[in-house]
Amino acid sequence: MRVSIGSWAYTIGPYASHPIPFDTVCQRLKELGFDGVELGAFPPHPNPGNPNGPDTDWPGAMPDQAQRAELKAKMAGVGLGFSGMAANLWGEKLINTDDQSKYIAEFQKNSEFAKEVGIQGIRVDCVQPPTILREIDYATAMGRVVKTWQKCADIAAGNGQYVTWEFEPGFAFNKPSDVVRIHDAVNRENFGLQYDTCHGQMVGVNGARQEGEKETFATQLEFLKLLDGRINHIHLIDSDNSCHKDANGADETSAHPPFGKGVIDFDELFPALLKAARLPHDWITIDLCFWPDAWAATETCKKRVSELIGRYAQ
Image 1 (cartoon, rainbow, N blue to C red):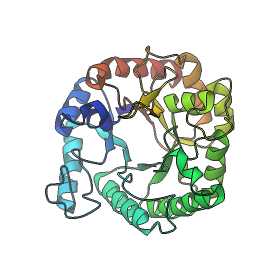
Image 2 (image 1 turned 60 degrees about the vertical axis):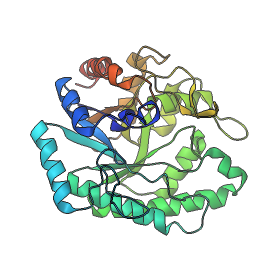
Image 3 (image 1 turned 90 degrees about the vertical axis):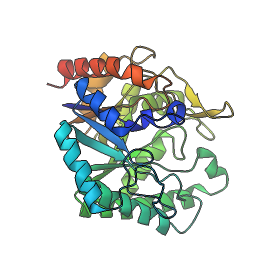
């Protein structure tokens, strides 16, 4: 299996004021023995362009096919692949509107970009926080998500891609039953779940930011039994049973501490996760989102994931 890491770890949160350039990231990852990078397709790293206006002064924008071909060739020259892409859809409305045409158009724009640079998988999430379900009834909200993602999955299928939903505490539909219900309702062969091990801990074991009565399991192993066969993308990182805090100090989404700084037993979890997943590729991705010293932690995380792959994925 090949190992990548999400490039957003070096552009958002603690790195927002001093993002690490994409070329620098790629050079360092190659030095550390990575096989690829998972692209956070938003400034300042390569992206399809400004969703709200002209691309002028939009850092990293690559609206032209020639720019995208150059990026694809540059990655090949470095010897790195793309394991997937986090599309920049957070500025769109998904649940809190009955018109998702802008969201769908932006997804299509990202899908075309991904195809031209050689990316097979596109990540989505529910955009709005779990508290949105206090304003919009459950059935209406779910119907909007399902209908929209069906159209997105069809767009992706036309471009030879899969769609992966990263469920997490910070977005709506963050209960285990929600995850299964929406996955089944979308009902597209190329649509699946992105299982991030820290989100698995916070959603499946802790019930973080769940509205109303919590739904939890004793362990992630029990949660994985529910999701068997539905997982089409994997993110590996530890969890210390806490959430990352927003600017006001409130829980936002799962913290992503490096391996060894949390509570997860990966010698138990990783083989079970591989067994539960149905991956259409051979990538395992590290996610250090919001970790304050992600750049320094990258090397040790790569070593740990390589160890796990060597032990359980041969």
